[in-house]
Length: 325
Image (cartoon, rainbow, N blue to C red; front, side):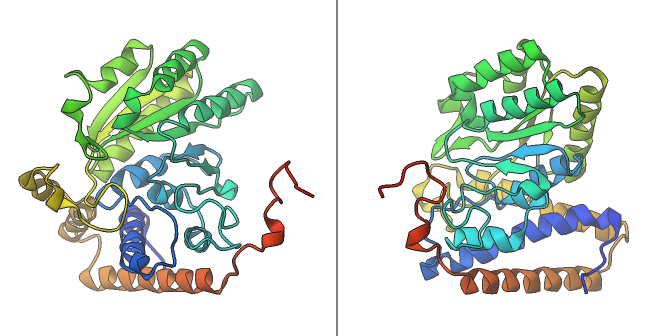
């Protein structure tokens, strides 16, 4: 029987679930059965959970190369995600996409891509479709601070403002693009001011504070409902592990040790847990039971993935217009 989670605890539960799923993936990655690159969002869980808490199932979400958190926060199927990472036929992309190509149309997680800023113009497409159809669907596109160096982002800002599209662009500013810090890549100016200059409404906040992320996103949703203008949200956060892979890479010295340690003290999962315990909204026994429930779910997802077959050679051209025969 599924465990019952009180409403005030659900956001914490979702963050903890993302953290434990990714820790399990990191632990098993060395077994060499997950044969795709994998970017983990450990340390950044509050942004996907906080943003998606303000959305409806009918709202559409696009991710990027680091999308496990967005996929799960939007309600994506864990079994299908794990199977996809293992390259199995029961994966959400039939085992053809891997970690960076997740999709679950049942919950309107529209997809993700490793191409930097690749989903930004796609979000304009769904936003335009919603406007033409006259429905109330909102599109959310997640991307990192590195995307601000791509021309398509600024072209999209201009078009979205011109057409007044119901789109929320969410920038997770974790200060680094692979190994290069923000100061070495961009001039000293707030990114949200650039979006504002394009004619967007903007908001910014602490990306490790789940309540703050949820509140700022709810305000953006309300503004779209009121006047239809696109929204830009910037949340400061920090990834704990290497850019790509399951390990720490502090030995490379591209991030100051005190900076890494400072951000780890701001762990979004621990902050929320401490708050719930201090408010007596949850007991330690309940916390332990939630953790155990998630770990059991994760184990079942790995069993599901390993039991699923690989795609057959005969299916190679199933999704292609090209067939050598």
